Image (cartoon, rainbow over all chains, first blue to last red; front, side):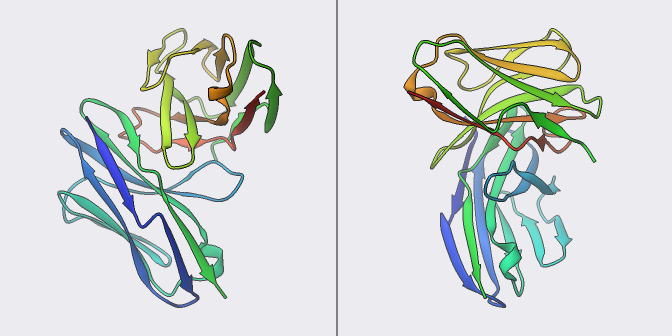
Length: 109
Length: 114
């Protein structure tokens, strides 16, 4: 059974304080690892897809990396508008996406 | 931009009622999905559809059914609502399989069953 665990559950940062969110997974045949951002009262919004270990993707202050067991979402010099819940999901050969329960990020001004 | 529209933001229903949640997408996507989102449990797949009139069970289909009569519309049906179906329901679509193309989500329907 595919499993996705995200940590920490919640993270509070000061503006400009860089940090990383973790997504560890066990899947049978990884097809892709996805990061989404979810703002309160809205549906998740796609950020990145990573397909193989060693791959990296960047967008503004966010960088996602992938190893064979986990993915990190690095946030460099975050701003208050980066506050959101970040969701990780994996797709495998056996099934549709399996989502983690998310990391709620709060960036304080 | 893909737009996925869910017909209601908030719904309050009574136990035993039949409930319809409607979802429409405007980008001719083949695949459509229904998830529910609960604190600490993440998003869990209820049903998905990869073509008109086709449907597949997800991880938690019990107590739900779906209908896809037209490509752009995917309906979730709670045959007899129960309090444990109180949740946020999210509809999504994707161009191809969800592990090959991103999901585009609607803004959700928060259903309360009393």
